[in-house]
Amino acid sequence: MPDDDLGPVGRFREEIDPVVFLFGAGLTVGIIATFFASPGTVESTIAYLNGAMLQYLNWALLVIVFLIVLFLLFLIVGPWGKIKFGDHPPEYSFISFFTMLYSAGFAAGVVFWGPTEALFYYANPSPLFDVSGGSAAAMTIAIQQTLFHWALPQLAVFTIMGLAIGYFTYNYENVPLRVSSALTPILGADNLDGPIAKLVDILAVFATIGGVATSLGFIGSQFISGLSFQWGIDLGNAGILLVVTTMTLLFTISMVLGVDKGIRRLSNFNMALFVALMVATFIVGPSVFLVLLGTQAVGGMITDFVSMSLFTGAGVEGGTEWANAWTVFYWAWALSWSPFAGVFIARISKGRTVREVAFTGIAATSAATIPWFTFVGGTAVWAQHNGVADFGAVIAGEVGPEVSGFILFDAFPLGTVFMISFMILVTTFFITSADSSTLAVSMMTTGGKAQPSNINRIFWGVVLGMTAAILMIIGGIEALQSAAIITGAPFAFVCFLAMLGLAKHFSATHGRVILQDGAWIVGPGPDRSKSADTPTAANDDD
Image 1 (cartoon, one colour):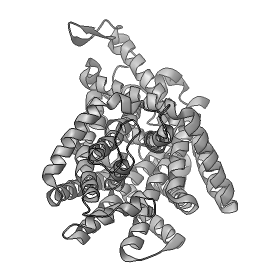
Image 2: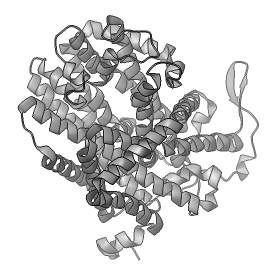
Image 3: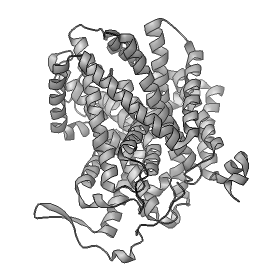
Image 4: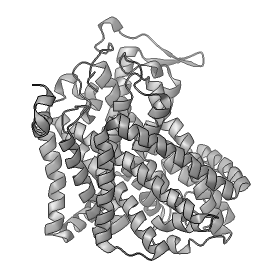
């Protein structure tokens, strides 16, 4: 029966994958219900799991993310990069493809931490570097560390999942657009409805809710704290629920409008405002200093990339605590987003090559991120170092990091205009992230259907909003960070297996890559006329 003849409820019941939907929803809703019955139980469980993850898996996250970055860089320059996702032309222009990928990935976090993160590294530099906190030398190290955290590695885990899901979805018959499809070479195309694939998809739903709820909590706290700090408006827990409900309503409306009318248009608006605010900050701020600072910080990031990637803090006083609080947290947060980001990247990548997706995923997005943190974060550090603005309360933890943007822009001419633009930007970036993630969860729970019903999308939007509100109420920023680590750490291994699966499959079906006469070439491969990887018109319904 055609979907249009089923009605909204009938279409919802017809489309869902009962195992993934019921277990994914049950796990998440069960935690919400437990919170209302016993908040202390939820809080203590989150704290215990967070500690266990950091104690036993921190090294694994660092190593896996580092290897994924190397693999993607190789795909950009190597011969496998010409492999295409299906035989269709690209669905979106490169600009729209880039803005949707950037907005749906981690842009809300970029805006949130832009004026804040470098301040913490300025006051307390990484123990990897022999630099005194608050010194002139610490300014460069602060920006270098920030760029390292927000350029290649975080973006890499989104991109590897998008590549793996998209390649097998568009080049194989009957491979659905869902997270478990990334493991096709390992599980086998005939086992994507088996128990292991179901488990991966259930964990993907849970990880996505935890990761995106973390971001919604960050953005909500930015509004709540900003209103209180700047204008003395204290909304309390009721305000948290009000802000989260409003944001949930906004991203649900955008989500129901669909990818083209909602996410694409809003993403293009986001990038225009993002660039405008970044350029305005550069002009108003210490422009020449920012150019010098950024140049040196980028050079340092490139030079120290390996040591920064693998720094566990072992043998250095306070090193492990520092690495866990920053680098490991960021990798886990990104990994918790990798299921939804991967599905969404795959959804918009049909017709593109492996090289285009890998380049856009880590290189083009880094090119947008580096100036933002250099100009906004660099101006904040400069202002603190020279007494232009006082971020001492933020650095000391007396107020939350979410107020840094208000302190910075309040020191600017037309500061209110900057602050309002900043709040609009962080909200609209989050809306695109939230509606694309909710769309991805809906796709995961329908067996990979590219256009899930509105009832399905709205259900997951409400669940996401409630999860964010609970995390904010029980523990604020610390609870949000713990939730991201708990939900993200297991997906480090899924991303790692997806990378190994791609490498194995590309080598088997497109030829081994060998270095000959100083150039990478594709060596002898199988008879591709018999390869199961011949491009097909699979998954045309998206």
